[in-house]
Length: 199
Image 1 (cartoon, rainbow, N blue to C red):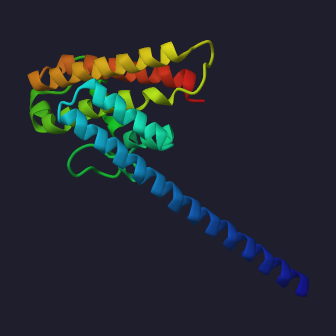
Image 2 (cartoon, rainbow, N blue to C red; image 1 turned 120 degrees about the vertical axis):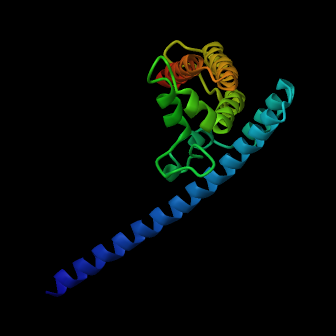
Image 3 (cartoon, rainbow, N blue to C red; image 1 turned 90 degrees about the vertical axis):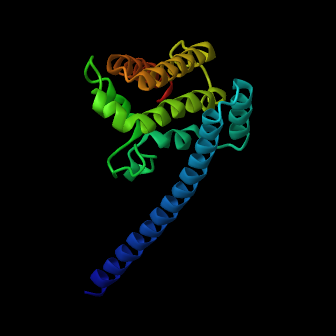
């Protein structure tokens, strides 16, 4: 009986220790996520202010020098409940920027005119965010993988940026087909890059 009690106590102590470590790690992750989000939003403000590429490049380099990890920076795309920005002024827990890009390109005709009018402001922000992220990610190249180099990394980021600019123009024109195509091109550039470098 004594051995059982001692064993149970030891098990509970271990569980408590692991739980405490887990909570501490979650808090650390939350801090890293919030710091990374601030850097992304600061860069987004530069894009919204129509700053030139030199300022965006300088900002991206400063983020890299602060050792902000790309994984945390990329969290802005995740669902709101998982640390992402979410989509819209008052995003639902399961809404996310990446999910919205996926949804936009599901049909060739794209969103309806009514939807484009309703979501215009938020879709413009989505496009501008991708312009910002294409520059933020650029200095984070680490090493060649699967025969792909910095040249390929930059090419996919250039494609993401170009698609984001196309999305911006299509949204402003309320062109559903153009929105769908731009979202598809953006998604493809991200998917192709992740297939090589996100391992």
